[in-house]
Length: 376
Image (cartoon, rainbow, N blue to C red; front, side, top):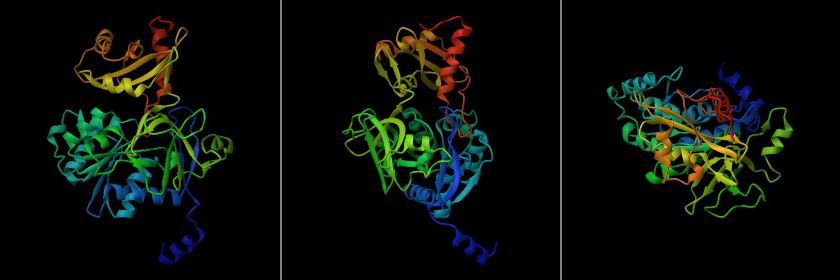
Protein backbone atom coordinates (compact mmCIF):
# COMPACT_ATOMS: atom_id res chain seq x y z
CA UNK A 1 0.00 0.00 0.00
CA UNK A 2 1.46 3.39 -0.98
CA UNK A 3 0.63 6.76 0.61
CA UNK A 4 -2.06 7.53 -1.94
CA UNK A 5 -3.85 4.28 -1.13
CA UNK A 6 -3.54 5.02 2.58
CA UNK A 7 -5.04 8.48 2.17
CA UNK A 8 -7.91 7.02 0.15
CA UNK A 9 -8.67 4.52 2.91
CA UNK A 10 -8.47 7.22 5.59
CA UNK A 11 -11.17 9.22 3.82
CA UNK A 12 -13.57 6.29 4.09
CA UNK A 13 -12.99 5.65 7.81
CA UNK A 14 -14.59 7.72 10.55
CA UNK A 15 -13.50 7.82 14.23
CA UNK A 16 -16.71 6.21 15.45
CA UNK A 17 -16.71 3.39 12.91
CA UNK A 18 -16.29 -0.08 14.37
CA UNK A 19 -12.58 -0.88 14.43
CA UNK A 20 -13.00 -4.43 15.68
CA UNK A 21 -15.38 -6.75 17.41
CA UNK A 22 -14.11 -8.33 20.62
CA UNK A 23 -15.97 -11.26 22.09
CA UNK A 24 -16.51 -11.25 25.83
CA UNK A 25 -14.39 -13.95 27.38
CA UNK A 26 -17.24 -16.10 28.62
CA UNK A 27 -16.42 -16.15 32.36
CA UNK A 28 -20.15 -16.18 33.08
CA UNK A 29 -21.60 -17.85 30.01
CA UNK A 30 -21.96 -17.46 26.24
CA UNK A 31 -19.70 -14.75 24.71
CA UNK A 32 -21.19 -11.62 23.08
CA UNK A 33 -19.66 -9.54 20.28
CA UNK A 34 -18.52 -6.15 21.63
CA UNK A 35 -18.33 -3.45 18.95
CA UNK A 36 -15.41 -1.10 19.65
CA UNK A 37 -14.59 1.97 17.56
CA UNK A 38 -11.34 3.62 16.49
CA UNK A 39 -12.25 6.42 18.92
CA UNK A 40 -12.66 3.94 21.79
CA UNK A 41 -9.38 2.12 21.29
CA UNK A 42 -7.01 4.86 20.13
CA UNK A 43 -7.85 7.05 23.12
CA UNK A 44 -7.79 4.24 25.67
CA UNK A 45 -4.45 2.94 24.43
CA UNK A 46 -2.88 6.40 24.35
CA UNK A 47 -4.01 7.29 27.87
CA UNK A 48 -2.71 3.97 29.23
CA UNK A 49 0.70 4.73 27.70
CA UNK A 50 0.64 8.16 29.32
CA UNK A 51 -0.08 6.63 32.73
CA UNK A 52 2.87 4.24 32.23
CA UNK A 53 5.11 7.14 31.08
CA UNK A 54 6.05 5.14 27.98
CA UNK A 55 8.63 6.55 25.56
CA UNK A 56 10.37 5.24 22.46
CA UNK A 57 13.04 3.82 24.79
CA UNK A 58 10.66 1.32 26.37
CA UNK A 59 10.45 -2.37 25.51
CA UNK A 60 7.22 -4.11 26.47
CA UNK A 61 7.21 -7.89 26.86
CA UNK A 62 3.84 -8.97 25.45
CA UNK A 63 2.72 -12.39 26.64
CA UNK A 64 -1.01 -11.69 26.69
CA UNK A 65 -3.16 -12.76 23.70
CA UNK A 66 -3.74 -10.23 20.94
CA UNK A 67 -7.29 -11.45 20.37
CA UNK A 68 -8.26 -9.81 23.68
CA UNK A 69 -8.61 -6.13 24.60
CA UNK A 70 -5.65 -6.36 26.99
CA UNK A 71 -3.37 -7.33 24.12
CA UNK A 72 -4.90 -5.08 21.47
CA UNK A 73 -5.41 -1.85 23.42
CA UNK A 74 -3.15 -1.89 26.47
CA UNK A 75 -0.25 -3.78 24.85
CA UNK A 76 -0.40 -2.74 21.19
CA UNK A 77 -2.24 0.55 20.64
CA UNK A 78 -0.27 2.27 23.40
CA UNK A 79 3.01 1.04 21.89
CA UNK A 80 1.98 2.49 18.53
CA UNK A 81 1.05 5.85 20.07
CA UNK A 82 4.30 6.05 22.07
CA UNK A 83 6.80 4.39 19.73
CA UNK A 84 7.64 1.53 22.11
CA UNK A 85 9.19 -1.77 21.08
CA UNK A 86 7.09 -4.90 21.51
CA UNK A 87 8.87 -8.10 22.49
CA UNK A 88 6.37 -10.76 21.50
CA UNK A 89 5.96 -14.11 23.23
CA UNK A 90 4.03 -16.32 20.79
CA UNK A 91 2.33 -18.43 23.44
CA UNK A 92 2.51 -17.90 27.19
CA UNK A 93 5.31 -19.90 28.74
CA UNK A 94 6.81 -18.55 31.98
CA UNK A 95 10.32 -19.69 31.03
CA UNK A 96 10.13 -17.97 27.63
CA UNK A 97 8.83 -14.79 29.28
CA UNK A 98 11.69 -14.73 31.81
CA UNK A 99 14.27 -15.43 29.09
CA UNK A 100 12.82 -12.70 26.85
CA UNK A 101 13.00 -10.09 29.61
CA UNK A 102 16.58 -11.11 30.39
CA UNK A 103 17.79 -11.18 26.77
CA UNK A 104 15.95 -8.14 25.39
CA UNK A 105 16.26 -6.02 28.57
CA UNK A 106 12.53 -5.36 28.64
CA UNK A 107 11.38 -2.38 30.68
CA UNK A 108 7.73 -3.36 31.09
CA UNK A 109 5.71 -6.55 31.50
CA UNK A 110 1.98 -7.19 31.39
CA UNK A 111 -0.01 -10.15 32.60
CA UNK A 112 -2.92 -11.51 34.58
CA UNK A 113 -2.35 -12.84 38.12
CA UNK A 114 -2.00 -16.48 37.03
CA UNK A 115 0.81 -15.50 34.65
CA UNK A 116 2.78 -13.64 37.31
CA UNK A 117 2.32 -16.57 39.71
CA UNK A 118 3.74 -18.96 37.10
CA UNK A 119 6.74 -16.69 36.46
CA UNK A 120 7.57 -16.11 40.13
CA UNK A 121 7.24 -19.80 40.99
CA UNK A 122 9.30 -21.07 38.07
CA UNK A 123 12.27 -23.12 39.40
CA UNK A 124 14.68 -21.20 37.12
CA UNK A 125 13.43 -17.72 38.10
CA UNK A 126 16.62 -16.77 39.97
CA UNK A 127 18.78 -17.44 36.90
CA UNK A 128 17.35 -14.47 35.02
CA UNK A 129 18.08 -10.76 35.47
CA UNK A 130 14.85 -8.80 35.96
CA UNK A 131 16.53 -5.50 36.86
CA UNK A 132 15.69 -3.85 33.52
CA UNK A 133 11.97 -3.89 34.36
CA UNK A 134 10.58 -0.59 35.61
CA UNK A 135 6.81 -0.98 35.34
CA UNK A 136 3.93 -3.15 34.19
CA UNK A 137 0.25 -3.93 34.45
CA UNK A 138 -1.50 -6.68 36.35
CA UNK A 139 -5.05 -6.98 35.08
CA UNK A 140 -7.78 -9.36 34.03
CA UNK A 141 -8.85 -10.43 37.51
CA UNK A 142 -9.06 -9.29 41.10
CA UNK A 143 -5.34 -9.00 41.82
CA UNK A 144 -4.19 -10.55 45.13
CA UNK A 145 -2.37 -7.98 47.27
CA UNK A 146 0.30 -10.48 48.38
CA UNK A 147 1.05 -11.34 44.75
CA UNK A 148 1.48 -7.68 43.81
CA UNK A 149 3.92 -7.27 46.69
CA UNK A 150 5.97 -10.25 45.46
CA UNK A 151 6.06 -8.86 41.92
CA UNK A 152 7.31 -5.50 43.20
CA UNK A 153 9.99 -7.11 45.35
CA UNK A 154 11.20 -9.88 43.02
CA UNK A 155 10.76 -8.26 39.61
CA UNK A 156 11.69 -4.68 40.58
CA UNK A 157 8.56 -3.29 38.97
CA UNK A 158 6.43 -0.33 39.91
CA UNK A 159 3.37 -2.41 39.14
CA UNK A 160 0.07 -0.76 38.26
CA UNK A 161 -3.47 -2.13 38.15
CA UNK A 162 -5.90 -1.48 35.34
CA UNK A 163 -9.56 -2.14 35.98
CA UNK A 164 -12.13 -2.38 33.26
CA UNK A 165 -13.92 -4.73 30.92
CA UNK A 166 -14.07 -5.46 27.21
CA UNK A 167 -17.11 -3.19 26.95
CA UNK A 168 -15.02 -0.24 28.27
CA UNK A 169 -12.22 -0.61 25.72
CA UNK A 170 -11.00 -1.93 28.34
CA UNK A 171 -9.39 0.55 30.78
CA UNK A 172 -11.73 2.39 33.14
CA UNK A 173 -9.43 3.12 36.10
CA UNK A 174 -5.70 2.74 36.65
CA UNK A 175 -3.22 3.31 39.43
CA UNK A 176 -0.43 5.71 38.50
CA UNK A 177 3.32 5.24 38.83
CA UNK A 178 3.52 8.08 41.34
CA UNK A 179 0.89 6.56 43.63
CA UNK A 180 1.99 5.14 46.96
CA UNK A 181 2.70 1.42 47.24
CA UNK A 182 -0.47 0.97 49.28
CA UNK A 183 -2.63 2.66 46.64
CA UNK A 184 -1.05 0.63 43.83
CA UNK A 185 -1.51 -2.69 45.61
CA UNK A 186 -4.81 -2.16 47.40
CA UNK A 187 -6.87 -0.19 44.85
CA UNK A 188 -7.44 -0.06 41.11
CA UNK A 189 -6.69 3.65 41.06
CA UNK A 190 -8.71 6.53 39.73
CA UNK A 191 -10.62 7.03 36.47
CA UNK A 192 -8.97 7.57 33.11
CA UNK A 193 -9.12 11.12 31.82
CA UNK A 194 -12.41 12.07 30.09
CA UNK A 195 -14.12 9.21 31.93
CA UNK A 196 -16.88 9.39 34.52
CA UNK A 197 -16.94 6.53 37.03
CA UNK A 198 -19.65 6.22 39.67
CA UNK A 199 -20.76 3.67 42.26
CA UNK A 200 -24.50 3.07 42.03
CA UNK A 201 -26.84 1.27 44.40
CA UNK A 202 -27.93 -1.80 42.35
CA UNK A 203 -31.46 -1.65 43.78
CA UNK A 204 -32.23 2.08 43.68
CA UNK A 205 -29.87 3.33 40.98
CA UNK A 206 -28.77 6.17 43.27
CA UNK A 207 -25.11 7.12 43.61
CA UNK A 208 -23.45 5.69 46.72
CA UNK A 209 -21.42 7.92 49.06
CA UNK A 210 -17.70 7.25 49.48
CA UNK A 211 -16.79 3.96 51.16
CA UNK A 212 -20.22 2.43 50.52
CA UNK A 213 -20.32 -0.57 48.19
CA UNK A 214 -22.33 -0.58 44.99
CA UNK A 215 -22.04 -1.37 41.30
CA UNK A 216 -19.18 0.24 39.37
CA UNK A 217 -20.48 2.10 36.30
CA UNK A 218 -18.80 4.36 33.75
CA UNK A 219 -19.66 6.87 31.04
CA UNK A 220 -17.56 8.53 28.34
CA UNK A 221 -15.54 7.94 25.17
CA UNK A 222 -14.60 4.41 26.30
CA UNK A 223 -18.09 2.87 26.27
CA UNK A 224 -18.65 0.35 23.47
CA UNK A 225 -21.06 1.01 20.60
CA UNK A 226 -23.02 -2.03 21.73
CA UNK A 227 -23.25 -5.80 21.40
CA UNK A 228 -23.34 -6.97 17.80
CA UNK A 229 -26.84 -7.77 16.62
CA UNK A 230 -28.09 -7.85 20.21
CA UNK A 231 -29.91 -4.62 21.19
CA UNK A 232 -31.62 -6.31 24.13
CA UNK A 233 -28.32 -7.30 25.77
CA UNK A 234 -26.94 -3.82 25.03
CA UNK A 235 -29.89 -2.16 26.78
CA UNK A 236 -29.33 -4.40 29.80
CA UNK A 237 -25.83 -2.98 30.43
CA UNK A 238 -26.02 0.60 29.09
CA UNK A 239 -28.73 2.55 30.88
CA UNK A 240 -30.82 5.50 29.68
CA UNK A 241 -28.21 7.93 31.07
CA UNK A 242 -25.40 6.36 29.07
CA UNK A 243 -23.75 4.57 31.99
CA UNK A 244 -22.19 1.18 31.30
CA UNK A 245 -22.95 -1.20 34.17
CA UNK A 246 -19.97 -3.42 34.96
CA UNK A 247 -21.63 -6.04 37.14
CA UNK A 248 -18.78 -5.53 39.62
CA UNK A 249 -19.14 -4.49 43.26
CA UNK A 250 -16.76 -1.85 44.55
CA UNK A 251 -16.30 1.35 46.50
CA UNK A 252 -14.71 4.75 45.97
CA UNK A 253 -12.56 5.88 48.88
CA UNK A 254 -12.22 9.43 50.15
CA UNK A 255 -9.13 9.97 47.96
CA UNK A 256 -11.04 9.10 44.79
CA UNK A 257 -9.48 5.67 44.30
CA UNK A 258 -11.64 2.64 43.59
CA UNK A 259 -11.57 -0.80 45.18
CA UNK A 260 -13.21 -3.83 43.59
CA UNK A 261 -14.65 -6.34 46.03
CA UNK A 262 -16.17 -8.85 43.62
CA UNK A 263 -18.78 -9.64 40.99
CA UNK A 264 -22.45 -9.16 41.81
CA UNK A 265 -23.07 -12.64 40.40
CA UNK A 266 -20.17 -14.11 42.41
CA UNK A 267 -21.31 -12.76 45.79
CA UNK A 268 -22.19 -15.61 48.15
CA UNK A 269 -25.38 -15.23 50.19
CA UNK A 270 -25.31 -17.67 53.09
CA UNK A 271 -28.37 -17.57 55.31
CA UNK A 272 -28.93 -13.91 54.46
CA UNK A 273 -25.27 -12.94 55.06
CA UNK A 274 -23.40 -11.41 52.11
CA UNK A 275 -19.92 -12.88 51.64
CA UNK A 276 -17.48 -11.41 49.13
CA UNK A 277 -15.26 -14.19 47.70
CA UNK A 278 -12.28 -11.88 47.37
CA UNK A 279 -12.17 -11.24 51.12
CA UNK A 280 -11.86 -14.98 51.81
CA UNK A 281 -9.38 -15.43 48.95
CA UNK A 282 -7.11 -12.68 50.26
CA UNK A 283 -7.14 -14.32 53.69
CA UNK A 284 -6.32 -17.80 52.37
CA UNK A 285 -3.36 -16.45 50.38
CA UNK A 286 -1.62 -16.02 53.74
CA UNK A 287 -1.76 -19.76 54.43
CA UNK A 288 1.70 -21.25 53.93
CA UNK A 289 1.83 -23.44 50.84
CA UNK A 290 -1.11 -21.89 48.97
CA UNK A 291 -0.17 -20.98 45.41
CA UNK A 292 -3.56 -19.80 44.20
CA UNK A 293 -7.13 -19.86 45.49
CA UNK A 294 -10.63 -19.18 44.21
CA UNK A 295 -13.76 -19.02 46.36
CA UNK A 296 -17.27 -19.71 45.05
CA UNK A 297 -20.76 -20.31 46.37
CA UNK A 298 -21.91 -23.93 46.61
CA UNK A 299 -25.67 -24.50 46.53
CA UNK A 300 -27.14 -25.43 49.93
CA UNK A 301 -30.72 -26.36 50.83
CA UNK A 302 -30.41 -25.00 54.36
CA UNK A 303 -28.48 -21.76 53.82
CA UNK A 304 -28.97 -21.06 50.11
CA UNK A 305 -25.21 -21.16 49.58
CA UNK A 306 -22.11 -22.35 51.43
CA UNK A 307 -18.53 -21.18 50.93
CA UNK A 308 -16.39 -23.41 48.73
CA UNK A 309 -12.64 -22.92 48.22
CA UNK A 310 -10.62 -24.28 45.30
CA UNK A 311 -6.92 -24.33 46.22
CA UNK A 312 -3.81 -24.88 44.11
CA UNK A 313 -0.84 -25.80 46.31
CA UNK A 314 2.80 -24.95 45.74
CA UNK A 315 4.99 -27.80 44.52
CA UNK A 316 5.95 -30.25 47.25
CA UNK A 317 3.37 -28.92 49.73
CA UNK A 318 0.81 -31.15 51.40
CA UNK A 319 -2.30 -29.76 53.11
CA UNK A 320 -5.66 -31.23 54.03
CA UNK A 321 -9.08 -29.68 54.54
CA UNK A 322 -8.76 -29.59 58.32
CA UNK A 323 -5.53 -27.57 58.12
CA UNK A 324 -7.34 -24.94 56.07
CA UNK A 325 -10.28 -24.80 58.50
CA UNK A 326 -7.92 -24.58 61.50
CA UNK A 327 -6.09 -21.68 59.85
CA UNK A 328 -9.37 -19.81 59.44
CA UNK A 329 -10.91 -20.54 62.83
CA UNK A 330 -10.88 -17.52 65.14
CA UNK A 331 -9.43 -15.23 62.45
CA UNK A 332 -12.39 -14.71 60.14
CA UNK A 333 -16.12 -14.81 60.83
CA UNK A 334 -17.43 -18.34 61.22
CA UNK A 335 -19.87 -18.08 58.31
CA UNK A 336 -16.98 -17.13 55.98
CA UNK A 337 -14.92 -20.26 56.73
CA UNK A 338 -15.08 -22.59 53.69
CA UNK A 339 -17.30 -25.59 54.32
CA UNK A 340 -16.08 -27.32 51.18
CA UNK A 341 -12.40 -27.36 50.20
CA UNK A 342 -11.15 -28.75 46.90
CA UNK A 343 -7.46 -29.20 46.06
CA UNK A 344 -6.92 -28.92 42.30
CA UNK A 345 -3.99 -28.64 39.91
CA UNK A 346 -5.42 -25.71 37.95
CA UNK A 347 -8.52 -23.59 37.38
CA UNK A 348 -10.68 -23.54 34.24
CA UNK A 349 -9.59 -20.51 32.21
CA UNK A 350 -10.69 -18.54 29.19
CA UNK A 351 -8.28 -18.05 26.30
CA UNK A 352 -7.42 -14.62 27.68
CA UNK A 353 -6.39 -15.96 31.08
CA UNK A 354 -9.51 -15.22 33.13
CA UNK A 355 -10.76 -17.76 35.64
CA UNK A 356 -14.22 -19.12 34.86
CA UNK A 357 -15.95 -19.10 38.22
CA UNK A 358 -19.20 -20.45 36.85
CA UNK A 359 -17.32 -23.60 35.86
CA UNK A 360 -15.87 -23.85 39.36
CA UNK A 361 -19.39 -23.74 40.76
CA UNK A 362 -20.35 -26.57 38.42
CA UNK A 363 -17.20 -28.50 39.38
CA UNK A 364 -17.98 -28.15 43.09
CA UNK A 365 -21.27 -30.00 42.72
CA UNK A 366 -19.68 -32.68 40.51
CA UNK A 367 -16.83 -33.25 42.98
CA UNK A 368 -19.20 -33.46 45.95
CA UNK A 369 -21.43 -35.89 44.07
CA UNK A 370 -18.40 -38.06 43.26
CA UNK A 371 -17.61 -38.14 47.00
CA UNK A 372 -21.19 -39.08 47.83
CA UNK A 373 -21.82 -35.73 49.54
CA UNK A 374 -25.14 -33.96 49.06
CA UNK A 375 -24.97 -30.23 50.02
CA UNK A 376 -27.57 -29.40 52.67
